[in-house]
Image 1: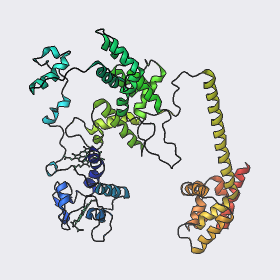
Image 2 (image 1 turned 30 degrees about the vertical axis):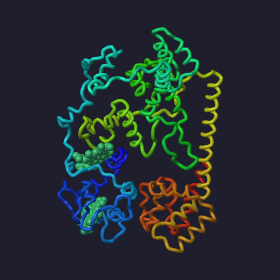
Image 3 (image 1 turned 90 degrees about the vertical axis):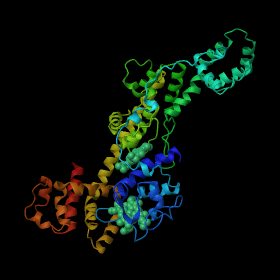
Length: 507
Ligand code: HEC
Ligand code: HEC
């Protein structure tokens, strides 16, 4: 079972089973309806009265999938009674995908216990112990050890009765060191220089040269960029094949990381900048603001809570060396991570925001930045004007045709007759009524009783309420309009509203 599969099970599958099935199918609850328990792998594979609950890899043949899809009248799970209801399409899709991938399931019979918080054994786990300075092992061939670290290696070699390999030749050493530090091979010239250099410092000089190469940051920064789930896109294209899913400025974060390695930035500073560069008063240069890319690159899938989950995941994996995202739903069992901490972090991220306009982080030529500012201003103005023109146009169109829209709303009301619906279709096409305007009107019709009270009363067959002086709560203009009690047809009502709206236009 791969870690991805375990994660898929824990994050997606188990919550569905626990929430919707365990009540009737678990050892924990002492319930095995139909002979089936679903809270262990064994239980799922053994199945119930009808045999194994699933066939790994084959969703069609799996009883469990047939049951949740409500395919068979006889088993529909969870049963659609006593408040139970069919799973959502996306939950069914998760279970189907799980079966298709072979139903990986990390649960065991002995694990059927509630989470209980930290045990002492958990507290003693090696990675939670403070760092200690070990004593350097005593070895026989002390001359071989150039540094104390070598003694740790030699100790194991000697314990196996072996001896170290012979020293590498100079060219091999140079090749290894160069690949190690800058990820590239040495050039012929560099090989020649090193072979000719007889001084005892020849190798130190090579190392210094490599450490000060700009390629050093590129080579080693890449490891950190992996940790930071660096990417130039949001992960997947959403919103159609033309949607732009790039982070246009992700590279500024990449360059920040490379630069930090090349500047030999202290690690504590590196952490602080990536979490809070915007809050630091002693930032060396504005380009260090790009450090915040650590938080803001990453997947933009689904709702804001999914984005925050991704950020918590990156921060905790990156800086604590631990996954914390399981604490989104429950305390961790072995490491000291309660849900409370997860949501404390969640609070931090949900109260942080990304500015609409990103800060300028490089020095820009005066002319260029002036030109940019002017263009942005022009475009914004154009946009605003366009927006208000559209609003005015739509308003105007509505005012001209208000009577037709009102009548249409009446003709398509709940309970309208076949003939009325046909009339509605004709009206819509002859008057060229448009859907968006009508939808906006419908919202207003539902909410705005002060304006549309008379229309609503008529539509609902309560016209008497208006004619019997029930004009309370209406806008004065509207009350005036309907003071005339002889009004009795939808055409008359629509005409009155039509007049009201076109007068508004003139004013
Ligand atoms: C309210 C109780 C209840 C819940 C909740 C429930 N089941 Fe059932 N399940 C039953 C009963 C009772 C049976 C026995 C057959 C029957 O009477 O329909 C059964 C039978 C089954 C069977 C057939 C077992 C066999 O071998 O005949 C499967 C598969 C199954 N359930 C899966 C599920 C799954 C998956 C869920 C959650 C998505 C679930 N059930 C939720 C009550 C429940
Ligand atoms: C979306 C919510 C959610 C997420 C995220 C989640 N779980 Fe769970 N987990 C549950 C639910 C619900 C249960 C069932 C609790 C119960 O039975 O009382 C559960 C139970 C468990 C159990 C069984 C408890 C026990 O004592 O045996 C383990 C183990 C577990 N989860 C591990 C994980 C791991 C590891 C992750 C992260 C990869 C994770 N969970 C992420 C919801 C979640």
